[in-house]
Image 1 (cartoon, one colour):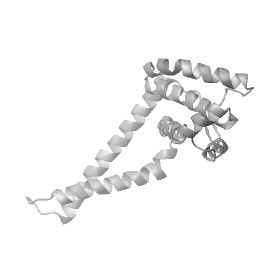
Image 2: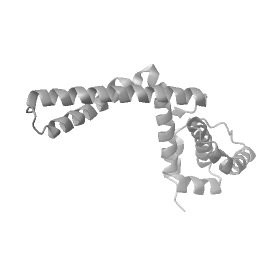
Image 3: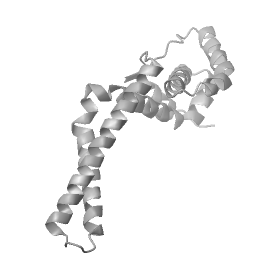
Image 4: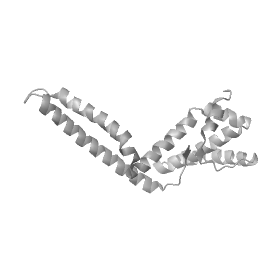
Length: 176
């Protein structure tokens, strides 16, 4: 279950820049090392060694994939980037069902109402973290209108957790 957590946008951007630079530096070093090693072992001096260089870069991509999944993902310096990825992935899960969510909201379904509220809160945070606040102004009226509708139905508008049950319930609803 994903939960929206308070995150300072400046700190988020600083930490994600740092993690991106670390990953890029590791990749470049790994690609150069593996390409050089492939040329040294299999190449010919003064010959066309492009395929060995390309093979070294491809091997670096594969090694980086393993490093990302097995080592880097759980490192503290990756926490902001992991959170951002999880936030965007959670929003995408709702977006994929948006036609059903909106139909459920129109029908007054509590799960759909909560999903849309989570979506609004998550999208708001994503835009703030990415520094895209101009998009927030465009959706402010819709967000407030939905919040008021939830309160009128007696639903708590503090939907900072994405409950997988909400997704399943909305999936089972007929699409309009």
